[in-house]
Length: 107
Image (cartoon, rainbow, N blue to C red; front, side):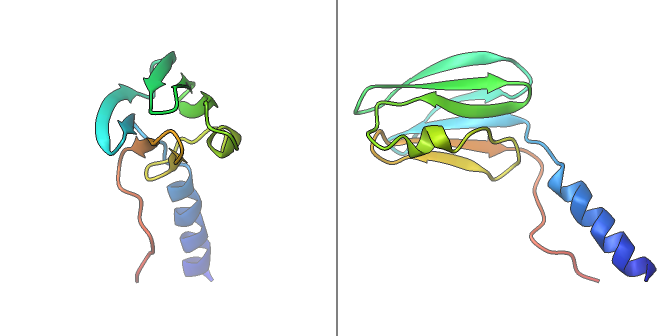
């Protein structure tokens, strides 16, 4: 019983890990890197036009984008290592970088 409680505790702790930096790529090339601890707005110039990112309170989101469907905007905020926002039409990728997340726990 104790081992089950311990596993649930560890899983919940892993889910609360926040990223340290956001990496922005345009057309497959690194555009910039910013700390998630600094609130700022970033303009990213892609093939379709300007995408605007908002970094706020340790999270990042695509605030606006020139793409037609706005799926990247609807993604909302991301904050955990490994999470991404991808705008395929404007060729912009936003990735959270930080301490490695574990995919599974082994005993």
